[in-house]
Amino acid sequence: MNDDLKRMLDEPYDESREDTYRDMFCTFYSRKMRSTAILVWGFGLLFFVGVVYSAVEFFGDTTVRDQIMYAALFVSFWFGVGIMKVFAWEMLHRHSIKREIKRVELRIAELTETVKRQS
Image (cartoon, rainbow, N blue to C red; front, side, top):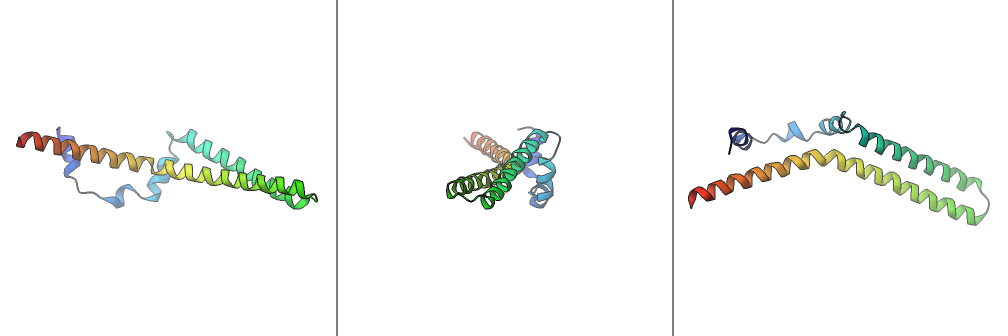
């Protein structure tokens, strides 16, 4: 292994430095993730407008058939808002997951070299 990999493996793990909410949000709103943030906010606002519109129409309508339709639209749009939140949360955690996978790969490489040296 090269020196950078050995240095990375030997460094103590400082969890407070890497996985803070501030760091995740700064990563999500970085220049590289701009299109994803715009997508999440755009669809989130679109779904929320649908929620408000269907709620207003539900209470303003007098026929039961239309009220059922607006109630179904309300629930569907509300699920859309929830899906956008889950998608944004997953995008926030993407980089920390990549870091952990890289650490596991480095540990496996170190273990492989150790086994090769012993045999």
